[in-house]
Image (cartoon, rainbow, N blue to C red; front, side):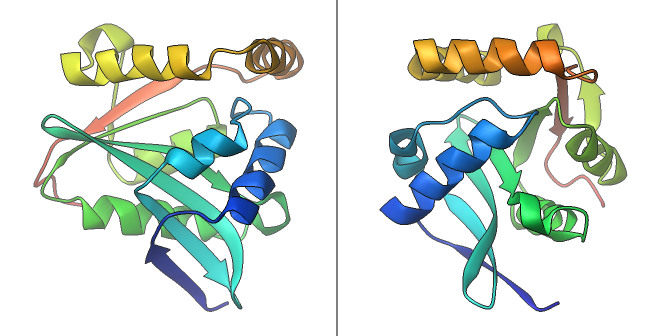
Length: 170
């Protein structure tokens, strides 16, 4: 399968499609179309011109945060996520990288890419401040209900935090 990965903003149509996908995913909280639209630095995986996966990045002081990161449900399990995460990690090889997820597949990919699993307390200050502001930005009744529903229905809802210091060899 020939997959292209480009770095560009999302279209309005793509943002709405991704919002719907996050509602269906057990491991990512609902993300409103406007929040997807506001993510300016996005790596997009396409197959035959169709969006099949997205990995947004956010630049912080001395760090890059990876996520939200999602592969469309009809393309999961065929290596799209691995290819996309590897591409983004390689792109930012000279910058400290942070990734957090409750998705067992993403957790396994992060481990395979030799990210270091650390607890929230050990996260750099810049990353913690961003995470708090991001949660406040996303806080809405719809998000809270969605997060609670997913937490109660998922048997594997354990959020893990990963870092990869710059110049870390893959």
